[in-house]
Length: 316
Image (cartoon, rainbow, N blue to C red):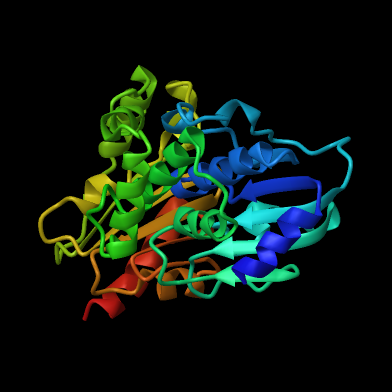
């Protein structure tokens, strides 16, 4: 598959690189790793995401290149869709503006869309798959690309705390550090360069903390009113789910984010026992065993009750 993708890159000129909406660290850093590498190869590249770049990732090389609209642009020879799980999460319209569509992902049950399907559920991050492609092409890993690959893996392994922090993840990270990536600079960019208004939003969100009677799951909620009051947006909420997850005894953490009246995105994080990927799929979403999400319609009280009831049955 890497040979096939290498040939596609070599034989084409104009590329689109996209990832899922509400991009996390892996989605954003993988997009920029591949974008920077393609530019180094002399290709024409447009990096795209329907949502704005979260402030935590603006330090990544090329972040300013990411566009939110493709209107008026010429069709692309190849579109790379990274870390999406399903095409609709990146944008179903991408199929119409790309001659060849390539799905690169590590999510289980990733949709088989497009012409090329490069999915490895065992990979620690989509960034690791971008690394494999570039190494297979014998393309030198430049400093900008190395910084993005390292960040992708660091973010998706929870700073090497999660079960997907496998030997390959550490090996790639070590190689990127050897090329000159500073772990402190990346950690500073991700965790110690927050806007004040993000912390004010976090304060409002933490006030919604609920812990189940059994103590095995907990949740927080972000509403449109909270974001309007703090002059923030969805891109400021990345990582909020880790706060209920950090409570002693909690096995599953949930983050409810209002996207429009009576529509909520629900994020799930599991410490291992509960397959929240299966739970999310029941709700029309998807993801990994330990990390997943879905969009649910209804008033927040009804959405919580529906999700909590399903969790109660799984935790019996």
